[in-house]
Image 1 (spheres, rainbow, N blue to C red):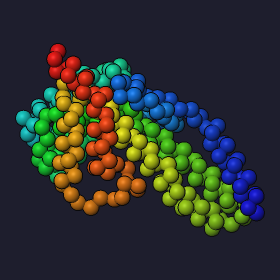
Image 2 (image 1 turned 60 degrees about the vertical axis):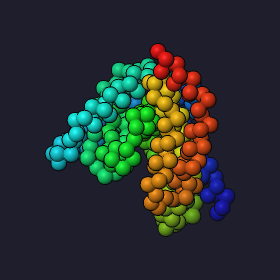
Image 3 (image 1 turned 180 degrees about the vertical axis):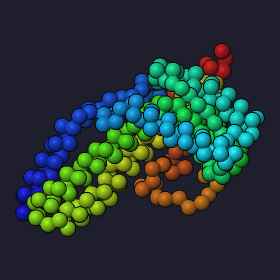
Image 4 (image 1 turned 30 degrees about the vertical axis):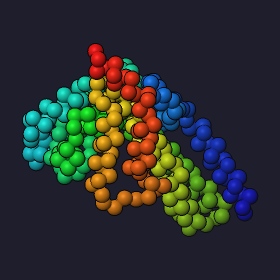
Length: 281
């Protein structure tokens, strides 16, 4: 019975490799920071990721408008957009096509300390970030450069592709176990267990990798836009000072504050010359 199950699983894994778009690619140029990882994005098109992101962003903006929580402070909105424009002007170093994206930048009233940039260049900054962290322009550029880098690197598309692959794999695994053991309950158990294992072994490690890539690329964008990349370190010290309960780094999609700061410090020799050159232009 064990041999039958192993044979079935081997066939499932082999078939997954033959799915359309199962090749890997790099969505950006490496830049001075050297981001070169090959990504698995073939199961979701760039257009699909951008369209879904645009729909979600449009709904968020509409809801915020209805609640009168969108761009309520014109001075802060102008500040955020000015920083964004300087960063966007540098995205060609990683993706020349991104210069032609339909970028949108807004600020929304929310106590959450957060900001994001969706596929295709849809940026939102929450007032919680501005009010609780009180970032300098250099620190805010570090946040926004990081979020813009997620979009440039197509991390959302990558997550969507992996989710599809995971779905195909779990359905195949459940079917294989059910056939091999002739027991529907075993198939259900395998599906539930497979979801748990996949979450730890597939989704989380790559999410941490995505965070590291966004840190690297964000530093370069900020430096090329004449924002001091060293501000990323003071930013994360402020983040750490907020406190609150945090999950163990091993099961977190974000690196711990301490390890993140250490990584950022290690990258400074690559980006400080870019900053000095941009500042002296």
